[in-house]
Image 1 (cartoon, one colour):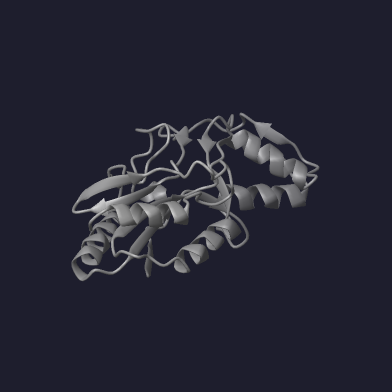
Image 2 (cartoon, helix red, strand yellow):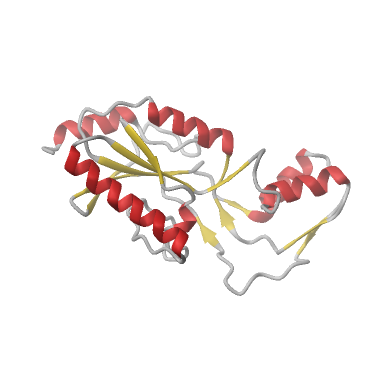
Length: 212
């Protein structure tokens, strides 16, 4: 089984077209970096079909944790909390699916160990399944770290191009001859399980029904 990642989904998906962005959403990158990822996905999917090897493209959404760039939200919040400083932020009405980087890594490892009975490309969003506002996210960690400073909510205005909602739909998309076939979540998988809740048993059963 061959595994590929298109890295951060925000590089390839148009951000505010969907309530929840499905893995078969059109690839509409906003810059050359995102375009290179979109091109890589299309090329790899075509190659997997041509050469008959299995391929999974994983698209993580918002993840956080140790080792993240100091300019990102969670490290900046943590630095202020442990320094006893106030933290200025927007009103925090942006909605995201935040996932610990450890869970993202576990998702990649689990995918590597999956074997496929048929050779076809799969595209999967990686997220927790939980929708949370940026304000709630910050308040949770501020309390978790027993921060002495204050969260100054609304101290920073929204950017002119602020993305207010960027949420993944946690399903699998099968890339078939430049078309997508959606494989829904198995009903026995609980929502918000912490990783991309796609049932491998369900996928294997679905594979046997299709003449690929």
